[in-house]
Length: 601
Image 1 (tube, helix red, strand yellow):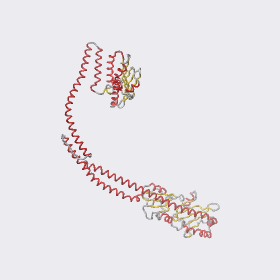
Image 2: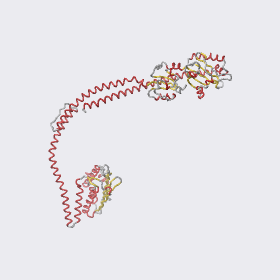
Image 3: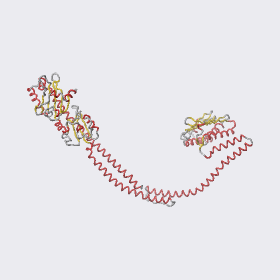
Image 4: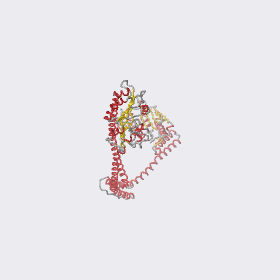
């Protein structure tokens, strides 16, 4: 793919993704702020409505307490329901109900006597009304819930179809409580105070931001059974939450109405605020459709798409121009490189400017000049290489000449019956053979131990009875691959520093064995030993460099340093250690972590 298309393929998606992410982030932040502000406004509205509901409920409770203290009402309940007493109660209560505009109906069931039929005292704002008898009321669910209440006080809603208040088609929000005697606090009746649900809805919800025909949001009051008691849309009164047009598509038809409010709070499609009334036990709910609220933010998405289109067009044009500026010099460079590829070293490019392209041209010209010089140098050095190869071939003759000469001496010693000289010649030949190792840099441990054995044999002939040696090797580690001439310098140091200074009875002990995952090589002598400071210098821990020491110590230190460096290069894990005590001897130990094939290079 040409560079121009690569720039377009890389730059344009990057810009589109950047603009898209920016637009999405802006939309997310804006929608979150809108939802938070709406939620705060809803909660404030729910609290305000709940306070108004509590105010109405407290007024209703106060009116119930007034009835309890009213001697006229108490007289009618305690002494019997007669037309005269009913007339007194009616004249006493009707002005309060008309002027209060809160309580629209009152039903008072006295406890019936033997001569009573249980007919209640019933009054509305329009005058005397009629209601079902006490025995009939005791068969309703309202009376059942009243008896189940610990406080003997409940807040509920009368449904017109129950026909509790004869001829009244309004849903009634009612306070139902036992009416007690003023003197002995014994129950002597049942009191029902009612408020029209539609009138309460208009009083609470109108002119509060939600109209009756507002399909985007709503406010309503719901009881613990999930029944709507008052709402912005009066047609919702008396229905369960699950049947409301605003939410029925989002809730399961199988969910209980009492659990619907909690389900709405968990539904992300709505913003729901809820305030609980401690007086009535009802919930004041404000709900709005989230998608409708954030619909006004859709212009951010439209603006993002427009910006992405404009940026894409500009990016295409700029990328094309930039690619032309960059690729034209590249094409010149490519043509020059093709000519250079077929051997034309006179190629040069001329790029103006001191930018990256200009510097690239300068470096290319320099590279062509250097290549021309290198070719000339290679041609000149090829002759020298041939001469070096001839010398290398000649140098390979020397080891063979040495082996042949030593074999001739060995044969002559055997013919003359001098077995000692023969053994010495054979050992010397083996030392040379194993040291050279056919030019290989590495050897097996068993080959290194054989080299040490021949070397010690020759040194034994030199020093006669001044020392003895012993070599021990565990077969498990015999195939360990290692750098050649790793043990021989250690044995040589043992002879130079341990045997030569001694007057006799020297011992050199060379040992190789396995210890768990480690191969351990040891060279031990019973020579004069070394002070602790010298051991630290040999291990590289002392403060005095070896070149400032005497010649013998410096030579030994360089040999040991060479061994440590080769160990570090050849093995991933190795340990080199020296233990020495003056008058007792010295032990040099090499520990090698064995790998799968005996070593890890």
